[in-house]
Image (cartoon, rainbow, N blue to C red; front, side, top):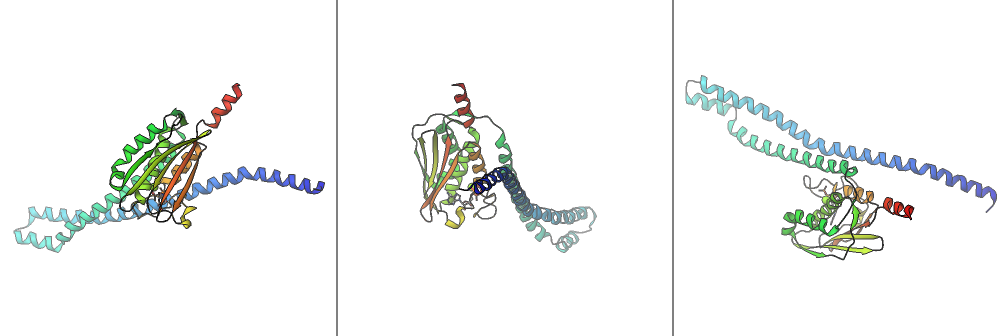
Length: 285
Ligand SMILES: Nc1ncnc2c1ncn2[C@@H]1O[C@H](COP(=O)(O)OP(=O)(O)OP(=O)(O)O)[C@@H](O)[C@H]1O
Ligand SMILES: [Mg+2]
């Protein structure tokens, strides 16, 4: 390489090094923007119809009060019945019930979105501790069992694992998301296998299902916040996005293997010791 070329190359490398943190920063900002836009969109819809239902319900209450007040004023039962009919009492009766049920569902949806978002904001809390991962997985299985038991036979294939340094409740959250997804991917009845393994400085746990599988065009979008193929009201599309941030925070990785019509496997790799601790121990030697 000529010296000119070498200069240009080192300049380029230097520019790249400087650009990288900026790029990362702008990528993070873009992700936050995307998340905020998604939240606004997802919350706007239920809030919109709950608001319009409330307006209609207020009109119904006004009419119903009118009917009740009339019981003190009317001269005959017929007069009261005529008023009920003119105010469409039968319709109000049915529609009020439907509006309340729909509004409850809308508020439930907003509530579950907010819970999912709270999980995101709690990622920074908690302390890293060494725990028995199998114990955490068993607790999570127990929690998920209500939903799983109708859908699948659950098989456990646990290896022998050392204790793992992690944020236990966050790791359980990841396992719960994967188990829920596995169960939702199974149409009638299937098998969910929970496996663990140990390789060098890392361990892994995986959730395998005999569900619908993931079409190739969806692979790149799985971790995108709000990406969901589930019907409205069923999935927020935050499960995998949240799991990704948790695993990333642990210095781990998620691997996916899936075949349409056959099933999917989500494998989570975690370092046994957090890099910070490894550095500390090396420093002490
Ligand atoms: N085990 C799986 N089998 C098939 N598809 C899956 C599986 N896991 C995830 N997916 C696909 O990835 C999408 C995103 O998953 P994610 O967990 O992030 O959101 P969700 O399950 O749709 O909603 P949420 O988890 O917020 O209730 C799902 O809608 C589904 O299409
Ligand atoms: Mg999910």
